[in-house]
Amino acid sequence: MKSEEIRKRFLTFFEKRGHAIIPSASLVPENDPSVLFTTAGMQPLTPYLMGQEHPKGKRLVGIQKCVRTQDIEEIGDSTHVTFFEMMGNWSLGDYFKKDAIRWSYEFLTNKKEGLGLDPSRLYITVFDGNDDAPRDEESVSIWEGVGIDKSRIYFLEDNWWSPGDNGPSGPDTEIFYDLTKNGLGDMSLEEFKKADERQNVVEIWNNVFMEYEKKDGRVVGELSQKNVDTGAGLERITMVMQGKDNVFDTDLFTYAMAVTEKNISDENKNLTKEMRIIADHIRTAVFIVSDGVTPSNTDRGYILRRLIRRAVRFADILSLESEGMKKLIDSIVIKYENVYENVKSQQIKIQEEIKKEEIKFRATLKNGTKELEKIFIKID
Image 1 (cartoon, rainbow, N blue to C red):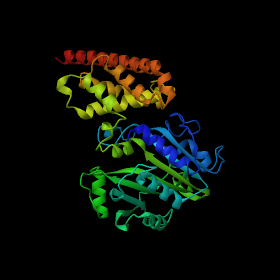
Image 2 (cartoon, rainbow, N blue to C red; image 1 turned 180 degrees about the vertical axis):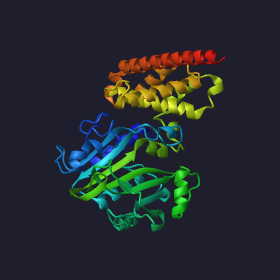
Image 3 (cartoon, one colour; image 1 turned 60 degrees about the vertical axis):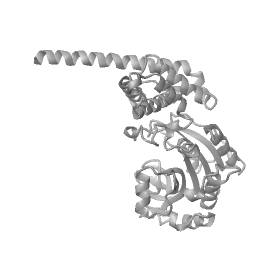
Image 4 (tube, rainbow, N blue to C red; image 1 turned 90 degrees about the horizontal axis):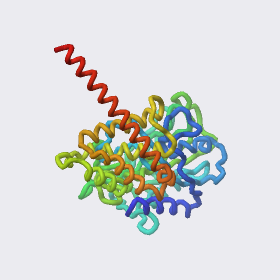
């Protein structure tokens, strides 16, 4: 199943269940100065999760563009990316745990309306409880009610989600999928944790039950309404649906990876991690520039600059041809032009900004090399 079909099925599934479809917000947050980029689907909806009435009602569904760079050193493995699309459905004081869990299970496993995944490969984690909130036994009962055996449900204290030190937060229940060829079967909690570390199982869905408010890093009380915030990463779900063991072999990346490989020297075609880093960073740069950001030495402009320069460094390692970067940008635009209109409309600007930054960086490297040579001459 192609990524385009997954997007369509997700939106249609929840639209049929009374959800209004909302477009992705910009990667540049409008009302949240605490973060540089939109990092989660709920972020643009924070005022409505706090009680403000949304113009489209209490049930919403959408696919949000997100950027996270805290795991930048992990890029090149099976699942980490700096730009991703977060599929989400939200209840603003309407339905709560029962419907959220039931619908997430139904969408993932139903062959007619959903994705038709194998239920025997699902594993569930729920909140173990702490000083802020009790153990989430209710979610366990609901999961058992839809057919998940209790041996596949694990209590974890980490199953708590918040956007930071302030804002709506609450316990969550995560869904993991078994990627191994023959299936792992029942596992103890420790076996499950090790399988997660090996990326034999991968998180594909998170139902967050937002019922508390955080201030300065601690829970100060309950929200005026109980909300549901779902996050389902398109890249990871596409990986599962296409039977791959990494996101870079899915249709979201295959064109970009092929263009990269075609434009590097033959002796470097085995450097898979480096090719993945370039494809990831340039894809992210394309989306950041398309939302109005340009490279600079501060804030989000600095993040963009760092991504482009990292891509250039790895491009040099691979001996990427001079026109290779432009071809890579074009391959990304082609993949997303029918999903995000501004990627296509900003194509020339994207090419220009990335090229300018590449030239600046190369000049910096050249000058730095000259200065080092002077130092070495003096030492000699």
